[in-house]
Amino acid sequence: MAKDYYSILGVPRTASQAQIKEAYRKLVLKNHPDVNKSEEAKTTMQGINEAYAVLGNEDKRKQYDTYGPEMFNRQFSQEDIFRGANFDDILREMGLNINFGSFGSDDIFGSFFGGARQNRNVGQSILYRMDLTLEEIARGTKKKITIKHLKRCSHCSGTGGEPGAKVTKCPKCKGAGYINRQQRSMFGSINTVTTCDACGGAGKYYEKQCRSCSGKGGSIGSENVEVSMPSGVTEGMRLRLEGMGDFGKDGNGDLYIEVHEIKHDIFERSGDNIMTGVSIPFYTALLGGKVEIPTLLHGTKEIEIENGTQQGKKIFLKEEGIKRLNGSTVGNEIVTININMPKDLSNEERGLVERLKELGEAHKDSSRKRFGLF
Image 1 (cartoon, helix red, strand yellow):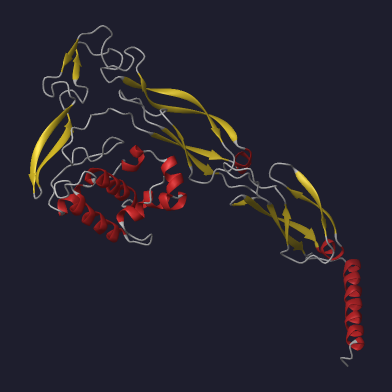
Image 2 (image 1 turned 135 degrees about the horizontal axis):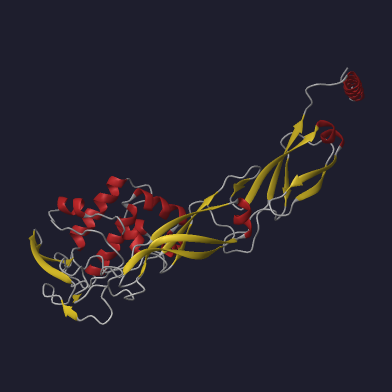
């Protein structure tokens, strides 16, 4: 079930950043396990922390409000949600001198609650901007892209050690990969867990480092990726390709493809519909006739203009728009009629228009007489 972060923090959707921050502070003070001894406290606090990581960040909050809870949680991983989240300032205001650092998708509150959090070396996710034409968005498309990122070292298979080298347990963390430190606060004793600085979280040493990657397990390289983009994507939407980001010894990050729509010369998008305009001569507007109208995917279409068509009239071409994302319906093309009035007339044309004017005035007079207006 999608998470309603506003309900978790107990604030309205119109809440200011100050109100969101204050709500978070109160919930921490109420639900911290050193105060709240219930078994559910840790799980509750994890949800509160996640909600604040999103709503406390204006950009993430905007995306959450735009996509809605369900779509947001499908598109963004826990690593994305907590990336860049910094709880230090607000916690210091509450008397908690704890450095949370950068959060990934692990047990976010493991160090806060004194739990022995498993250290993980997960690769960074990467973002690629993909520019798409309106035609590509309407059809769906496949694109071949090249990304430059941290890849698994082929020589050591990502271990960081020279093949066959002896492995030694780290003496500082005793193979755990993390160090547990105890601190005192207004709530009592609090344990914090940090990555071992001696082994970098690996928990072990290789007698010989990999000569290709110098013990890092990965190296920068280029990779060709074919991306299938469905029809109906929108500006700013992100497609997540799991495990195709930077290499990490405990798992790769993800690759996010962010959609950007290239401005079209004659069409403008409005949801699943597309908008355009067509100019017709004034005599076609008066008498009616056939005109050619461009469509996004099917060339031009000939349509019938009714006699007496007025400036600004809208004509709908059914299912000539964009297929809805993950749906079967197709939008329409909406054409606005612009009547092209000539600026210069020949003597013959002017005479014809004046004759038309006379006929119009005569028709107007006869109508008045018929209805006894004078």
